[in-house]
Amino acid sequence: MSQSSRKKYGVAVALSGVFGILGIHHFYLGRWLHGFVDLAMTVSAFYFIVVDRPILGWGILAVDCIHTIIVTILLLIGSYRDGYGDIVSYPGQKLK
Image 1 (spheres, rainbow, N blue to C red):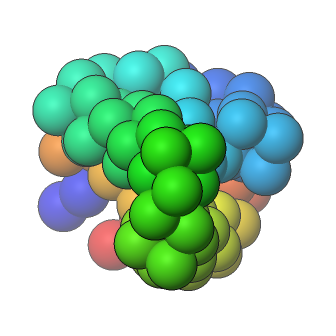
Image 2 (image 1 turned 180 degrees about the vertical axis):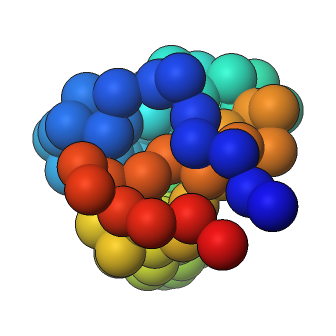
């Protein structure tokens, strides 16, 4: 049986929606490695855009945005797990 996360659903969704490409929501949920990878992708994307490698930079940024959209959708439907393996459940969600 799955257990509900102690992390707040609303906070996780808001962080994902507002700061998603930076990975702040991963840090909040205790998924540190995932957060560092997300942050590194954003920083490297902007670096490549600035140093005259815009195609590579925009490509990395596009992958990061798609990843953020997928994670946000998983959070919204109550299917995303925190760093402890517990489901970040929406209010009233019945866990199996």
